[in-house]
Length: 288
Image (cartoon, rainbow, N blue to C red; front, side, top):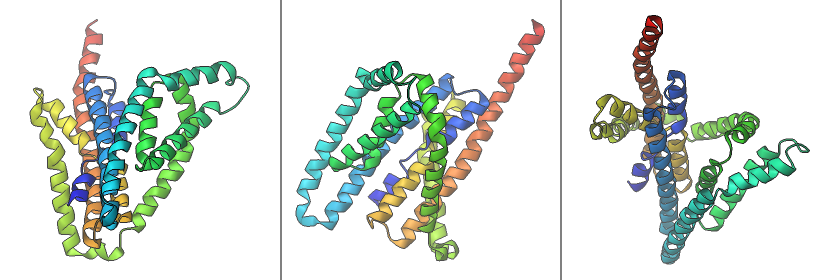
């Protein structure tokens, strides 16, 4: 039950950002709200993932239950403190500046190697602390966010191709975890539909916390997209044998359903809102 709840805390910001870019709303107040909420949600979600994985391990080794919880608490505190310290001090920006000054002109792909090295370092240190490697990688991503946009763009342009390969492989591996028999299992589909409805409701209810209900609706739809983060939760749950075949299949189908339908609904709504604004700008320019 706890793992099922954890799976649906996830939020994928990637699909929302792409839709906001196409609508020209990424740098607006709405865009900042969606991206900010999704990033905070991701941080909390990854921490929850780490906690659940450790609890599952403790359940498998009951006689050592105390030590994992103590190590988990220490690890999470160290992770949060280190991430905040490195981010606030701008360590990544300073290292990137040093590389730019001394190595950028004489070495190719220096930023790509720097980003990849930081990624591996963060994941390794996280694993050393007894946390999930994805938590360390995410923390390093937060730290690297302070690097100049030009450097990030240079590194991203070189990493993007590899990302598609690894993401594709990850999605294939997740797909192989879904037994073919579950696709024709009525019980699995009933649970999947129930999880999908609850997944939408759990995030969409945020609409009622906004004065502007239209913005609240868009934020709720954007947050409902679970994407690859939800799939990571399912993969960890399966690796730790935390879900039986029925629940694992149902949660995997629900993540896929809510991601696809949420992305379609969000893009449709955000583009619908963008059309009147574009029309208004055209009228203003015509009057001038």
